[in-house]
Length: 254
Image (cartoon, rainbow, N blue to C red; front, side):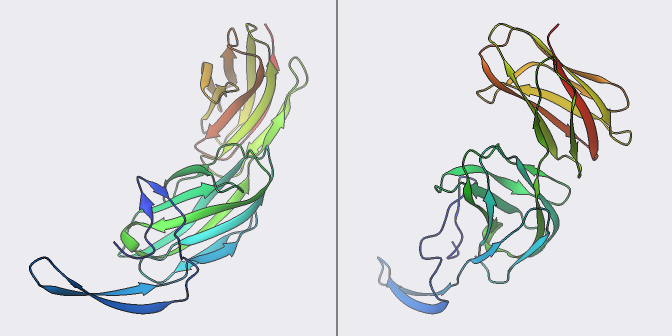
């Protein structure tokens, strides 16, 4: 295990002592059979940087076992996503993991990311500084360029006028929120422009689980249906396309 490597069950955890000044330590250990081994341990600081939405940032991790931390100011209720623009590792093609923590240090999301992917984070529950920890697998050296995006999210009044949302990169989500009453049914209608691509439409209940019948739009107009809302509260229409898109969305009751 390389000092500074902190991958545990797929989740990246802050490393105690990551603020230690770099130094080289040598220790000899006597085994049960009287043998002696020597270990050279290099302690290095993690690389920390502040990132700004819609501005690409490059984080360099030149030392084996070194992790990165990108910090941004988030607001409660926002949706954000992370787009990796370029990833270079030594050895090549090493997996890079991320984990996002909220202002209280609680884990929000974690997984791996790669070129061509877009990481759509859950809705931010608190205002303050969020941290995205970056951990190359098995202590690989890495250089990563990425961009944090503020996702399009608007509130729609039931039986009110259509609202507009958009996504600027492929696989980025856009969101429409509306208030539903338990037992009532709703229709989400969408008119999408997606350069011939397909936009998926899903409805999530207040608990975050998928509800209703999903749908889509793109080269045709369609939507999604929520029959007999399981509970009263704010529901979220999640839209995601394989290409950038714009959409006009309305929520009505049949």
